[in-house]
Amino acid sequence: MKILLFGTRGQVGWELQRSLASLGELITLDLDSTDLCGDLADLQGLAESVRTVSPDVIVNAAAYTAVDKAESEPDRARRINATAPGILAQEADKLGAWLVHYSTDYVFDGSGTQSWVESDPTGPLNVYGETKLEGEQLIAVNCKKYLIFRTSWVYAARGDNFAKTILRLAEEQESLTAVNDQIGAPTDASLLADVTAHAIRCVLSPLGHNSLIPSGIYHVVSSGHISWYGYARFVLEAAHKAGLRLKARPDSVDPIHSSDHPTPACRPHNSRLDNTLFQNTFGLNLPHWQSGATRMLTEIIEKQS
Image (cartoon, rainbow, N blue to C red; front, side):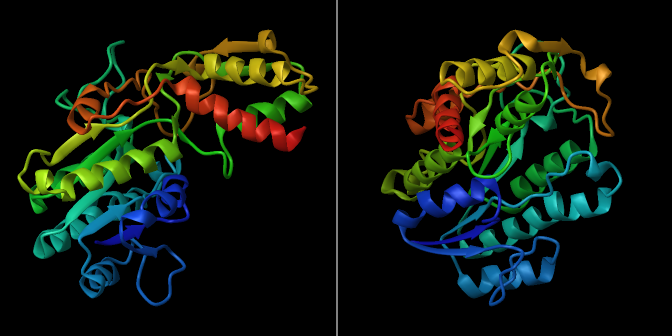
């Protein structure tokens, strides 16, 4: 099996390099690749890379993810998040290859309190969500064999993340604030990478070739949900249990509304995604968000101790 992976510098792409390596020959591309083009803004170069490699599977972990900046750069966001995935879909279809692509809860309008299922009406609130939705649509009309994994609140122990920010601020300040009206599931990039590898094995097995695994959109997030406020308290509780000396305590975090912290791009309040379809289709259990978050915090705290 030959797998072509785009977006290796991102959180999910970094973990995919590990999880996909055992499946077959893995070719990885990113913005700084020289032999082949890994820049999703270069549409012609992107297509030529796929034709040169001629993979069995294309995994696209690259995206324009600067949610607020997208409001002032809609054309660039659309080129990377919509047009480029459409090109990848066309090239995958010509080869008879599978395309795996990542999308977001931002395709929904964030209303209500129920977890969104894959068939629910979409209604993005910002340019980022609009362009990610357009990417989904272009893939669906241009490729027969595809998996689109919608996810939310992705983090990794490597690089910056919300938990690290909270710990840093707690070292400097005696009180913190966090938004309490945005609800979602913190999802570990390593979990996404591992289940992606499993899904690829499934669709390329004899059973997969018999079309028992249908192409389509799947919600792939950790189970459970929490607000950013609740997540901040969870982080500080873990830190204090581990003996970290911080100025701020869990009860020093004050809840605020999204309106108290305005941003150029409107965020959805309800980012809950129902992961039942993915779990049933691929025979996997997606663990509670606290499981991955606890492991990640343990790594961070051990380095700081």
